[in-house]
Image (tube, rainbow, N blue to C red):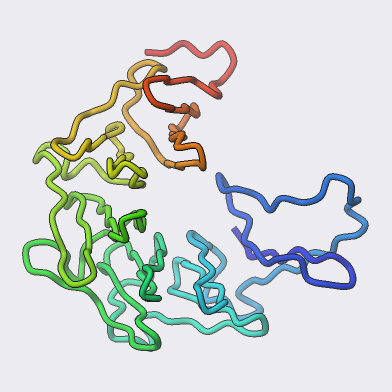
Length: 259
């Protein structure tokens, strides 16, 4: 979970962070590795610490990294850290997720420090009595096609921000403490949420628990909605693809016996 930048000799291709269970940078298979250079940045180069948990390139070109030691902005040369050491809005420095809304506001999910926003240089915390607080454990962020910002918490349920107000997404009471790990909004307006107790789906009217095709899975850990509207669901031991009514196990350990 260190930061790597991969370059082609003679010019920059891209900057990225390579982390466990995340997508890798796509390279031309015709190029040999001899044409590539790799730079590595650590706390010795300005990071507050070396566990990078979220990555985002904002619309103004900056790279942002969420670490266990705060939010980091990289301008291509140096790192700037925003944390409880220099920003009153941060009451906890463990950054779990990042998202940018269409207005250019960067949203920062912290695990134990609520939801922080970086609005063109101004850093504040979003607090709404009875919903998000300065100690909320926010785990997941997602900006849907509708422009809504979806906010998943560890034990307080799911919310969405419409640009001016925070709304409760209406999870059933028994699911509010399920530990949301990811959320995505599909093009049809439906919403999927992965949790420590399984997969949930909202069809615009009600939330339902989704039966997985790979046995009695009690935890889903990541979601990805691709360009053909297929939903990819990761569990601790499998990858499942949902497309319409079809549900396909893409990967599972050989000879695994489902419970």
